[in-house]
Length: 69
Image (tube, rainbow, N blue to C red):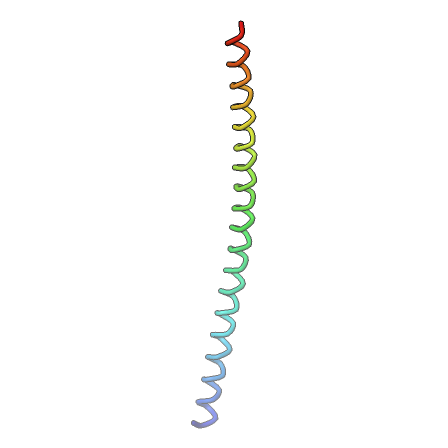
């Protein structure tokens, strides 16, 4: 290889490194965004499950009271 070949090779390596680093950073950002979304949705699901349990208990209590009247 001559000097010109090395210049092209180095330039190509630099460009590929830049491209891959940019892709990696973008992917990490997307993973972070989606992880936050999953966490928020999981929290919402858990809140709704708790609300369902509360409503079930309230409904059961109302049925018990109706049986005694």
